[in-house]
Image (cartoon, rainbow, N blue to C red):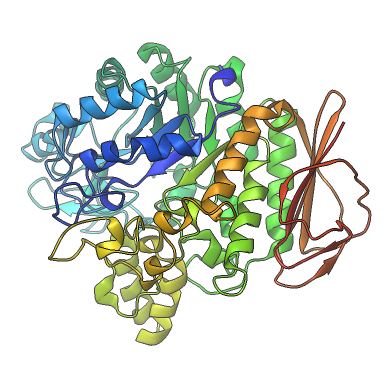
Length: 545
């Protein structure tokens, strides 16, 4: 199964912000169709597209009200079918995003549950409270209580995320059958694979809420639940997708479970997304805080996940950015003097590791955080909730906005910057775009980089091609090396007689290296002439034969 993806890369599209074809300020399916040649030019083989199904859009499409129909804001089913077909003709395959932990409260299943139908009430997690209080004081991922009261029923329903996203009851075989039919529906449309949203949260604890702490973060009690592997194997088996490209998003998971999810003989998933490396700038585990990335922690997370997944037959998805993360060049690079160098270094580090790399729209041109200056510019429900929470905890508006400037999901959701022209080439709209476009588009855009051989864009194209050209990258072992310098990350890949050594300076200073001795062909990098002294944000990949 791994043969179909281990030397390939994927490109992620956040539909709402990729390309607007009809001038309404919102990206759409026909906008994606218009850019398929560009995506192919990158060298990727798969396109992960975020949900465009019918939705009230409280969480930008991750609150699905109809899994089998296209949200009119994004186009029609005919547009979708053309998109799949046109991509296929270019050798590109779509991965559709299945949000199966929860549905929108606007979904017909939930509406029937509210009408009192016991069959559909069992599709969700309704529970009695006690003296008007919810069953627990668990906190949802968006900062509110994870229970919502329904006066008409005298019951609470459970939601790990927003109150408009009611969690499904996967213990109910009818629910599992419904979800399998949805997968088969899109498989029959020609989709080449699936990305499953927060998949490790679908199996809730045994004796749900009875034997668990009454307060705390809800996700921590629901991660990697007792039947999660059983449920995934059943889903894959009964939909016939075992040989397709499948990736599961895993919230607060661990290495042992990700090995189980992805080991081929277990017949679960091709690979997993895990997020531990993107918590290296969380102060005391708190996302909504400000701190510089802890490079020692970052190094240790990468080395342990890479080496343990490799030695036990697991497979990683490799990524820095997605629609839920700030821009990596703003987060761990340098937006100013070393913008280009740091963007290339970060790309080098992630793309030459063992696993399947993902490029998030705009990452390939070094897009940065937008640096919004007022709360009215933010659209993300999580960011708006936590802004109020931060104010309630005593932060000033200025302090809370500084945290959002660094941590908000909207940092990765501003429109794709295609040109230096109107609306960054994203839209012809005269009425503005759904979310603001940062001033950086005048400098950072596809048009400015397309024909520049030294551009970040063309550097990404080289990296993606290397994975095809050198089997040591796709198939080789992985081991992290001691450089004698905490700012320099180094690892080696080995396959037969080949040894590839990758060196990356995560610092904005000149740094010295010890303990590394390698000579050979320089495959890629901002080479300064010596791998014993690395320039600010320098990257280097050397192949020994």
